[in-house]
View 1 (spheres, rainbow, N blue to C red):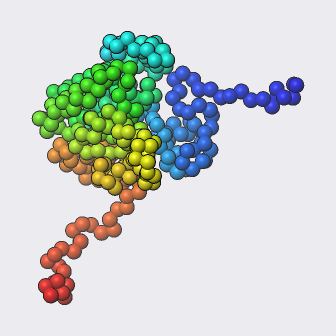
View 2: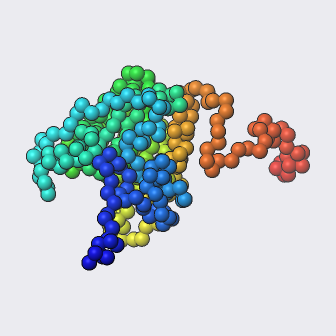
View 3: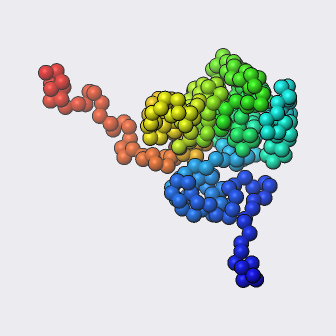
Length: 319
């Protein structure tokens, strides 16, 4: 019996402030490599072997996007109520109290002012670890307030989405947030301020049907699930097999729903440059090429122009 206890191992646990996957090591969902979870966190929650993107905690996301020491939190004063006295497996207030204590915030959203490579922005970041990032009245109100304040302060708005959709415990009140967030974005449009969205895994339901897909530029992280209804629901409805990669970011990019799919390590620089362009500003004189993007071997001015084409080519076209 003593020998059995000697070989027995206790299951590793994580501390309350640690949002990385439980256990000291985990098996990558993309390549099956064994990853030390602290290395995963240091690598922006992406697999160092294959680049598989894991869901990222809100605080780590803000640290990645905002310039150091520039983030000023706006959200946190609002908390959800229970106007419908909703009860499923447990009363709605008890469910919210438990999730709030675990995540350390009143709801599934964090908003605030920051700068990204010196560009003034308002960041809206959804927390999927808070009740699946569901959008209730508080989430919709915080997004609307952030958009309106961004317009008042002449800041661009950058929204990072991660949500399972509307919050069913609030019924029709949660569905009203689709209209609220959409209307609030008009304040930015009237002042011609940029609005950029970053869709992460997963972005579904009412969030996809409202502010997430209204950006001037819509980016996504690799392999992110982006949809209104999930693939299983669609497959059961139409009784047909779905294409490979259906509703994933790369599939939607080919279909024209997204403007680009950007690896997490390149997001900050890409977003900052896009915001500069949308604001009519000049890009930095020297921009380091992003991972996977090759530099031109010759400057653009050396490229052939229509006037420099050979006469034979012009004759052949005329014939």
